[in-house]
Structures are given as C-alpha cells and as structure tokens.
Image (cartoon, rainbow, N blue to C red; front, side):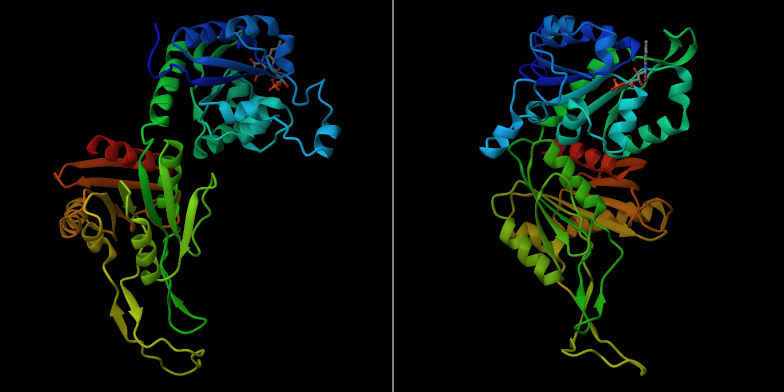
Length: 411
Ligand SMILES: Cc1cc2nc3c(=O)[nH]c(=O)nc-3n(C[C@H](O)[C@H](O)[C@H](O)COP(=O)(O)O)c2cc1C
C-alpha cells in the first residue's frame, strides 16, 4: 500500500472548528497507509467538535493544540538563551493540510494573523499549504471569504474547493468538504513537485538593468523582475539550489533566497560569469538594456538646452552564455509589443537559435495583463525542437511552474 511519493513524508494537518472535522480521521488513516508520517494541530474550536484522542490514535502522534506548552517555563528559557521549539512542526512539514478549513482560519491566514499554534505554524512554514474549506453555503459565498480565498490563491496557497451537496446545517449548496480522492490527488501532485528539482543548481536573472547618463540620471526599462523572481521562488520550493541575480530596483523575493543585485549590463554579465560554472540550468529573464550612453557625464548635465545622447549597443549576454558553459540548460525570454502570434513565436525561435539555447519564453507586452509589472502573463514556450507550448493568461507563479515543468521534461 506504500506509495513512494508519500513514503516518509511528514504531513501536518491543521484541524479547525468545522462540523466536517471528524471526517479527517479517515484521511489520516489513508495517508499513513500510503507511508506518510502525520502530525495533527487542532484549533481550540475544533476540540469542541471532535475528541483529540481520536486524532492521536489515528495519527500515532501526540495532538498539538496550544502555542504555549503548560510545562515549559518560557521566561527561564529566554533568560538562558535556550532555543524554543514552538514552531518545530512548521520546519518538519513536507506539506501542510488544513482540513476542514473554517471561514475564520482562511480569514486569519489571509491577513497574516498568527494567534494560535496552527496559524503561527502556517505563517512560519515554507512547505506547500493545502486548504480544504468546508462551511455553510452562505458563509462560502460571503464576498469577504471569497476575497480571502482569492488573495491566498495568489500567494500560492493551494485550495481543494468545497463541493455541492447537503450540508450539515440543513442547507443545500456549495460548502461540503471535498472528496478525499481529490484531496489525496492534490497532496500527491504537490509532494511530487516538491523535490523534483532537488540537486539541481539554477541561476535565474530577473529585472531591469540600469545604465547611467550622468550621476543622477539613468536609462532603464519597465521590467519589475516579478517573472524571474517567481521562477526562482518556485524552483527553490521544488528543491533546487537557486541563485537569483536581480535588478537593483526590482521586487524583493520571498524565502530568503540567495540573491545578488545587479546594476548595469556589464555588472549583470560579470555576476553571471562568476556564478555560471558548475550549474545545471540558467534562466535568463532579466530585461537587459540594448544600449548604453557613449560618453557618461561625470557631473550632472545642466538642464534647459538641447541634449544629444550617443548610444552604443551593449553586449548580447544571452548569446554568449553557452560559450562560457556548454553544459547548461539555457532558457531565455523574448518580449515583443503588439505583434501576431506567429511573429512572436518566430522571433523567440530566432534568438533561441542565435544563442544555442534550449527554451525561449515569448510574451507580448503590448497586450493587457501581460508582461511588465503585472501579476499575470500569457506566454509561448518555444523549444529548440521547435515545439510550442501555449500558457494562457494566468498568475506569474503558475507561469513559473509551467516553465519549470517544461524544463524538467526536457532535461
Ligand atoms: C457546531 C458548530 C459547527 C461549525 N461548523 C463550521 C463549519 O463547518 N465551517 C466554518 O467555517 N465554521 C463553522 N463553525 C464556526 C467556527 O467553529 C467558528 O468560526 C470558530 O471561531 C472557528 O475557529 P477556528 O477557525 O480557530 O477553528 C461552527 C461552529 C459550531 C458551533
């Protein structure tokens, strides 16, 4: 009955105060049969609805309820500088499941509230979190609940949506805890994904370069670095050893990623050269300036009169990378503005050939909701075999995962 994907994985289950909480006992038994280790955190509300002893028996582990352990003298611990393991379950989890999830816990997580053991552990974990809501249909349809769900989905929390049916409160509608098969399928997918880049060394470049005109004025572009940062974050969550080279003014990545900030095209190229040896994959999503000012002024240029700048082309970094390390799997990006799909894909393929790259991700930044500084994108992933994968308009985090899925298939 053991399944290699579930085997020896630690799954922490948060049980909250919904009527469906007794149903989770069967899910816990199933997870253990598949080979996982299960720990249960109950909220105080859930202890009114189900006996903690049943969860202890089903999981084979002590059930945790309180954030503060009654037998620990925290004041003495702090005075002696001893480590306090109040969020140890957040660290050992391969996956967090909240099942059933109340409207209350969804609202607390969405707003960063950490006022009990479950919400504190969720705030502290980098493991994937799967949320399985179950509640009265009116609660589920409440716009505040729906807004919280939307916000969490954007932040990469995974939802197994409730189903339509008879509800314990006597109503009929959407709100029943999802079928266990669906929950198990989602857990399996995330566990599989979690380590599929383990052992891989990846450098990701993201954001805009900056070229000086004079000591106060610069030339740059509208890239926010969101796409590359999300790729780096997802690769990190999937087990890769990641270095993110990110533009000076670009977004701040999560998860304490190893990162170095770059400024000019030359600076970025030097940082790539320093990091490119012994890596497996290079994903070059940085928006590199095509030009630099010829004669940079060492003092501030006076205003009020015409100014002619002379620009020279910068190094085409992407085309040089395979010459420095032939073994890397090289991924580039191509942005076009308001062009046809055929033109977009062809220009991606052209730069792929020039750089001897493995994949190029093409997007049209002239269309709404795509490209610079937004949270969504629509892309075409073009491979050197010239197969084309279309990713419809979705959150950049989903785009990041799809790019990583394609890389893994091609490696
Ligand atoms: C008998 C009973 C059943 C409940 N069932 C649900 C439910 O299915 N879903 C839900 O969101 N809230 C439900 N609630 C309300 C929650 O228990 C309440 O919002 C509580 O504050 C949740 O706390 P927790 O999220 O910390 O577990 C129920 C309350 C009672 C008294």
